[in-house]
Length: 317
Image 1 (spheres, rainbow, N blue to C red):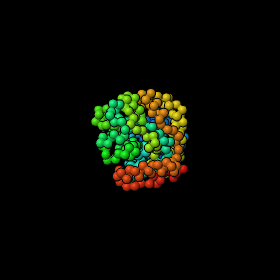
Image 2 (image 1 turned 180 degrees about the vertical axis):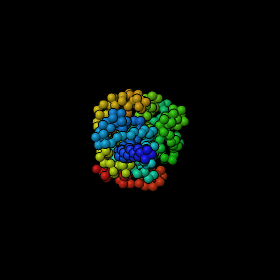
Image 3 (image 1 turned 90 degrees about the vertical axis):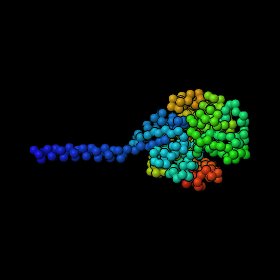
Image 4 (image 1 turned 30 degrees about the vertical axis):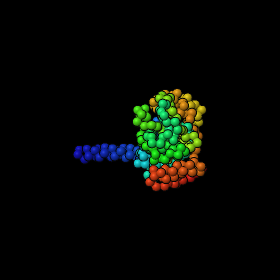
């Protein structure tokens, strides 16, 4: 009897171990692309439509989405291995690459220079960028508008060291701007459009003529190099969303509004200033991004020079 019980017990253990082993193998074989996104943009629409999940399922991949307040935070997550892919403006990947983040430029969207601006309160005595000398400007450190501010000051003959910067994320910057604790605010859409409409913020200078304001899609190097198929599916899905959004900005705004918390009519303004048409980086875009990196290094904002070309998927197209 004792032997029989032992056999049954052993058999139960064996079955349990086999089940655990099978579950472990299934877990190990699970293929997930972890995407970081911000409150606004093509990736939010891609997430909302479920298009990527639909296209990845046949090749055995799923998606995990994580929201971030801005590009620098998203790329920090990529640096520590918490996400595999995300989208930011021009400056965040430069700072991240300089800090040693293993990132790769996968693709970009065409220029959208009106999609970022330096704003001042509607009744501010500040009339030109030159008037910012000695003033305090709020911005998200290392974001796309960081370069806009640098170039706008340069154009106006004002040294970067002749203003005071207040490094704040968008929500805190908006509060500081409304309370009058900063004189100006460098910000991107849709926060830019919201401030223009809701509190009649005045545009002091947008990016036209001085910055391109590209949107970049970036991946962790290990993920990009090992997973060409799902990455290509992802890029193609973004392309489909781009085509749809460009043709239907009002409908896209209505879809975005609940998640962004900004009225659709404001988002429509932002979406019409956005650019569409995802493509690989070419030599011109790489050169523009290198110029930004060199500018930041010259200003002492980067600890060392970097080579953008070293971080481009497959080299320039």
